[in-house]
Image (cartoon, rainbow, N blue to C red; front, side, top):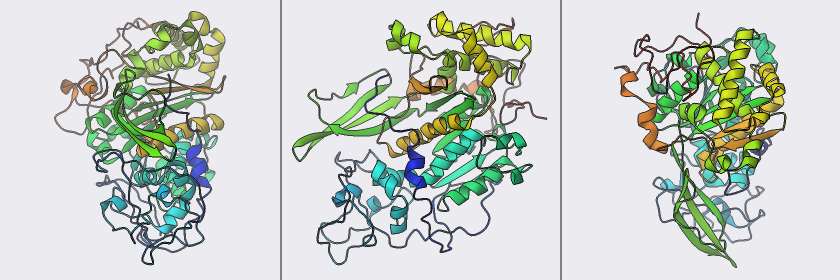
Length: 552
């Protein structure tokens, strides 16, 4: 799928923030960062004092420049990009407040939105982040390299974000590390499993001393030390014990290494409350990342080309909503506001075909990794059996036949799904390889940062990582019909909702793979998307643990 711009490096969050992670002061004070407005009662906050300077010390006035004539909350403000860095040679008013004299700031002070025209800028709402806090000089110094990379306005939005990550395994380690180092407002870690010796193989947040402890509690203590300015909470409960309203407290919800039934449960809840949702998982050399942003607006700034950018649809999922131009020296720069539409996890992972540009090109179809077909077969197996395939003959036959059918449904040439690849994929299921989780976790964290900053094109909507080729290709998987918010009725059937908010049954949960036109290789009856097993009492969630294992 064509991109509007060059992709960012996958490990950018870690690169941008790790170099500055040692900057916090030794002064002890109570944190004043934003946090979810109503934390569930079983959240565990980090113990002991937090070493961080007060957020209101040496506050710098940072007005947001907008060139689109819209309010900050009603549109996407544009901040002029950094041109170069050096000590300013302007004569600043005596009553202006600025960082320490030894701190490098842009030679063009407007690059960070600093008001240098008529004295100190008034402390109005434009100078504050979404939670009403001004950035301090210490924060600007700490996040200096990040601000140079994605700008002050994006950093403010990142610092206002409350994020939930579910399941603490190797992939979640990488995502959480990058987000904490980027300086988000708060991170809540949800996991009901205990640390085992197997968890130590590819993780860096857990140690042998943590064995037997709850994974969320153990990991949160280590995450807190990475950046004391970020509030890190642990929730040792199971995700399937949560009601839909639990997810409304977060700006972004990330589900990692979960079974598809659980992912569909979470995605339905995030759709109900208009929250961004990410799903990701790794199996040895293979992995995936999915996002449902429902309808996401963002702004691109670029040099104006020979052909004028027109307002209207660009692709089936992307449209241009506004275009502004301005002169910057000898060149004309255009600021383009765009909107991306998304589909739910159920529809993208089960029933959606490849885009038309793939179907019409044999060359592009041949280049599609067979890992996509194998992942769909794995998700189908997990939905039917509530576990991963084992080495017995029945499981292998089920998986092989399902993968072949998924490959055919995607219109992919049969010769690209070879027995060697099937064998390799099956051998990697359930394993973790640190370099793979680092690459995939970095890409997920980078996309979340781009989405929060609203200044880069996000993932659309499925990324498949193939370690054999060391490629992470993006595929836009959507069903026929409506996209974006219009899919809410498809994602949530009122007949499946309980009268209370405590639980709800997601569509097709009771053993149905939900694959349209896909026959169950074991001979069972297939449920279609949206169907509910009549033997399952409505309003009762399946008895499954965090990773889909049957609860004791």
